Amino acid sequence: NDTGSLWLLHYLLVTQERASIYSFIFNDFRKLHKEFTRLGLDKFIQMKCADANLVYTKKTIDTDISVFIRNYYRSTEGTKNPEEDYSGLLLDLNLLKKVERDGLKEVFTLENNTANLPLPILLYAILDGMTADSTTIIFNDLLTKSNKVGSVFMLDAETLDKALRSLEQQYSGQIAFSSDAFTGNKTLQIKGDISKNQLLIDYYNGYNKQ
Image (cartoon, rainbow, N blue to C red; front, side, top):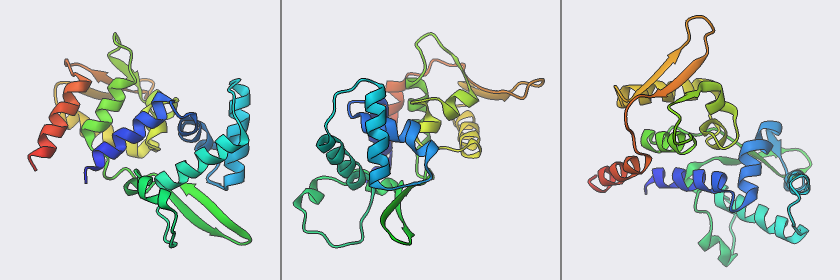
């Protein structure tokens, strides 16, 4: 089972915005709500759709939320729903958990769980989010801006810092991660000619040889 492919699919679901619910949840909603119910998520998505002048129906949002939960939450309860066989694509990322709260049947939380996020997939996502003529990106932008790796992969500052230092080591001479001596601001600089598509080719060639 190639977890890197699951992280890549997750990244594309959020950033391509073909299904807006994923962008809303990972870029905005989770930063405001540590825990949530279906009803709370439903109200938030309706508000975001209204703000963006998106056409929607209550039924569509309900369906989208159900699909989202089935994709990420591994239920321990028995089910005879045949749809379960065709969903749950991202269960192995272990991002969505259910928590026990008195009087509430379903309360969920999204958790950072990036220990199995391959560095080439992380670097692909960083490069994909940069403009073609850009070679430098500010750490805080990577951490907090919409569709950047901090938001999409739910990375906190410590985890992202550690990951970028690992990238600098693995791609020595091509990447530099540094702090300004005066301001302390951190930046990631792409120094070599790194192709995001070649990263994926190399990653899958290596995976297939395992």
